[in-house]
Length: 107
Image 1 (tube, rainbow, N blue to C red):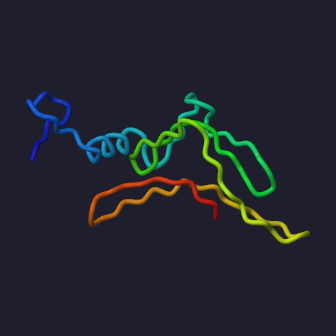
Image 2: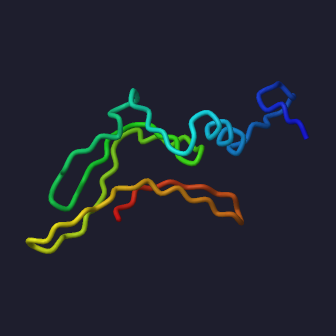
């Protein structure tokens, strides 16, 4: 079936799925826009808090925008032990409802 996505059809019809497919085709799996906002930079607020700054990203074809900042909590470590924490963007889609979400997580 052919679907003229961006053509005028007389009613609203462009879906998030349409835009996601276009983004995935144009950009691939993961792209951070280096010229937008504060480029998803960060500030260490304390030993247990990191602040992720504004920016835009394409993940799984979905455009995700951080317009201000987002603080993420980092668990207290063990003294004299080295560790690596990952600050990740988690994209999820409920296959039953189709509802999508994105959130920062610390792993």
